[in-house]
Amino acid sequence: MPGSHHTKDIQKNINCCPSVALTTNTSTTTLAVRQSPQFTHTEQEQQPLMAQPDVQPEHDKKEKDPQQSARSAALQRARARFLKGVSYFSGDMEVFGKWMERQFFLLQLLDWVLRGAAQVMFVNNPLSGLIIFAGLILQNYWWALNGFVGTLFATISALILQQSRGAIAAGLYGYNGILVGLLMAVFSNGGDWYWWLLLPNIFMSMMCPIVSSALASINSRWDLPVFTLPFNILVCLHMVATGHYNHHFPQVLIQPRSELPNITWAEIDVAKLFMSVPVGIGQVYGCDNPWTGGIFIISLFISSPITCIHAVLGSAVGMVSGLALAAPFGDIYFGLWGYNCVLACIAIGGMFYALTWQVHLLAITCAFFCAYLGSAIANIMSTFGLPACTWPFCLSALTFLLITTGTNRIFKLPLAKVTYPEKNLRFFWKLKKQEKMEAERKEKEDQQRAIEDVQIQNEKEQLRLELERMEEGKITSEQPEEHVDVPQDTEEEETRPNNPTDVTVTD
Image (cartoon, rainbow, N blue to C red; front, side, top):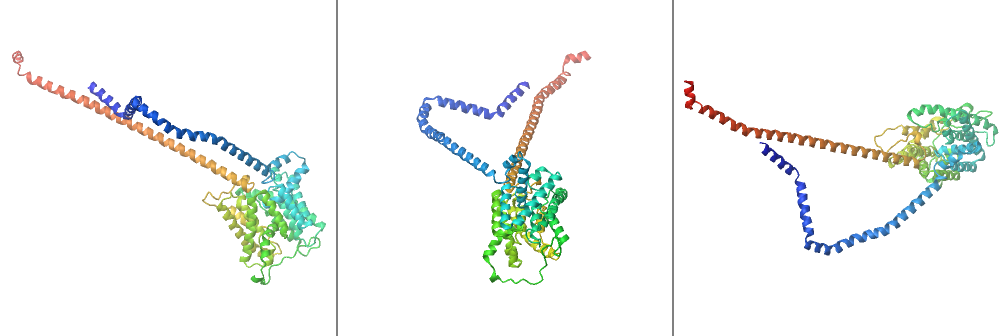
């Protein structure tokens, strides 16, 4: 019946809102209690005791907050000034490079040459390049001159070939030139100040950008650098083309080891052993003077402390590897076991990988691998009268840059983003932060979508329940009506034959 149906709907609405009713009753009761005199008196008594502890800390906080904010602001300003001052001479000297773009050509060329001299150690810093040239002058004037000529003409050749101006300004076309010039002077048997040596030096240095560009077109498919492969190719080419018995450009005679070296552990010189660490760093440029190696360490520290640390670690790993493989002590003292490990450890330890503890251990592992590979390549190439050069470094570093791993703690940087380890690390952190924010955003979207799905399901369920209740209500309202009508019809049918009037009419 309609009346009962409406009554049930009202009851259903009341049952669906128990919290509202309870809240209304509670608030009404609370308001009534608060309006009573007893509650007002009690609240007035308790208010001073409860309010005093809350007001006092806020008052103290208001007094302390300006002091703390002023101190933090002062520390931030001091930190920003310090970092800005350090950036003028450390890292890649970006501010100096932008200023140099507005200067005349010869000054820019000098900046490119200095950066090219430092890029042998993966350092894009003209101040470090200037200090490196000071170390070369301390070692040998003639070698320093050949290195400068090689860097200069390699850079000029890159300009003639119209290579990337940004790569030229970063010294990426000069570092192979300085190695070609230096090592041609080091392996020359003509002695110092043999001026005719400058002719093949200039020619081979100008060939460096050509070989670099050709190799870059191949290595770029795997996003790999060229390293010092042009230097290795061109120096070996020059030494094979001339050799030891040459009238114009004689080379130092290199022969394989033909007898067992005399190694007595009691005769080892610990001082020279420790001194082999800076000598190994100096041997990257072919220098055996420990003071020159120390100057190179300073130049690395100015640009990047991470690079400096890995250079020292690489040289120490080379020294330990030489002792483990029973190498002659003279070779270890001379730094021949360290220089390839230095370059390998720098390349992996923060330069082309973002520095983490896993990458740090990977760099040390690469240095050990490079030492073993260097011994093998030196033994092979000595049979052809050639030095090992930096072939071990190139092969080991390229091998470790091609590895694949499932961990995100070993992250290989895109070649276009490689600068210096500290900046590479900031790029890695920024990338991880963006990935974390993106993951959080997706998680929030998924949660919101799940909540919406649950709400839709609840609404559907409520509609279904309401429909079922409405159908049940209709059925219950129709059943009593049918029950009343049926007995009336049967009673009329039963009473009709018993009516005498109906019987007479029919008769």
